[in-house]
Image 1 (cartoon, rainbow, N blue to C red):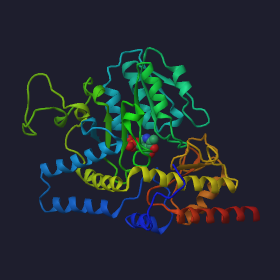
Image 2: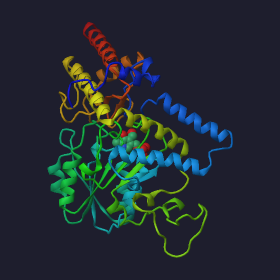
Image 3: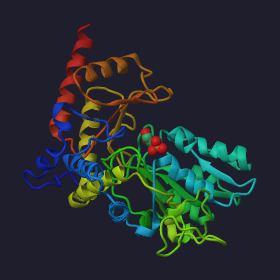
Image 4: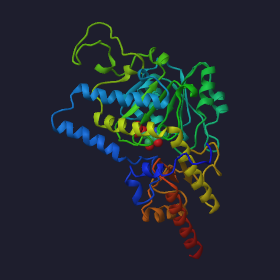
Length: 405
Ligand SMILES: Cc1ncc(COP(=O)(O)O)c(C=O)c1O
C-alpha cells in the first residue's frame, strides 16, 4: 500500500456517483452491509422485468450464476470448479465442516473471541454430535497469534479455522502464517472471509488455504442471501458432501429432474456443494457488483479503503480517542474500532462516552455500528475524504461539547 492515490483525476467521483446512498451522509457500515450501486439495481430490475414477463428460463438463470461464479473465482484467484454457490457464510462453513470425515477425538482450533458466532456454534454442534474436541485459543491484543495456533496443534488436529478479518476488533489475520503452520502439521484451514473479500485483495493460492466462505452483502456490495464457498479442488474431491441436491450430482446432460440409480457421482471440485435452485436475484446482483469490482480492480479498492481507514484512525487518535490497535499498521484493514472491547453488547458500548459519541454521530446521519462494546467505523469503495472530514468535524464538535460540559 502506498500513500499515492490509486485513482486518475475524477475517476473515484464517477465510481462514488454509482452509489447514491453515499451522498446523504457518511456511510461507514460496510462491515454490516455495503451500499449497493445503481448497476446492481439495474441488474435486479432486469431480473424482475424478465420474471414479470414470464421469461428468465433456467438456461438464462444458470448463465447468470455462471457469470457470478466465474467472476468470483477470478477475484480470489481460484478456478470456477472450486467455487460453490451458497446462501451465507454459515452455510459455507457448515457444508465444508460437516463434510469432513471427522472421528471422535479429532480436534478443531478456533479463537472464539475473534469470531462471529457463526464460526463458533457449528463447532459446538460437531462436538455434541460427533465427539470432536473444540480447542479454543485466546487472542493476544486482538490478534490471532500464529505461535498460539502452533502450540495448540497436535496429530489429532484436523482443521484450523480463522476469520480473514476478525469480527471484532476487525484486524487483519495472518492467514498465510496460520495456514503454513496448519499445513506443516497436516491440518486443513477454513477461513471466514465475511469481512475481507471484495475489500482486500484475496489470493487463495498465495494464502495456502483449503476453504473460504463469504456472503455478498458486505464488501461484495450486493444482497443478502447469496455467498460463495471456495474449496481447493484436491480437498473438495476427497469429500462426500453432507448435504446433496440435484446440482451437486453429475448426470452429464440429463434433465434437471432426471433420476439416477446406484452410487452418486458428484460434480467436480466444490460444485458438489451446490444444492439446487439458487438465489437467482442475488446472483444477478452479485454478477453486476463483481463486474464493477473487476473493472475497478480489487487492489485499488484495498489501497483506497485502507488509506481512508488509516486517516480516520490517525485523526481519532490525535483527538485522544481509544482506537483499537493504535496507530495504523499491517493490522488495519477498512475497520476502525473505537473504545475498549470486551463486552458482548451490540447496541451499546461499554464506555458511556462512546455511547454518547455514537448518539452524536448517528444523530447527524452518520452510519456506523457498535460491535462487542466498541464503535465500529467501516470504509467502503464509495467513501471518500469528504466523509472522513465530516466525521472528524463532528467528533471535534463532540469533544468540545464534552470539555465545555
Ligand atoms: C466475521 C463474520 N462472519 C460471518 C458473518 C455473518 O454470517 P452469515 O453470512 O452466515 O450471516 C458476519 C456478519 O456480520 C461476520 O462479520
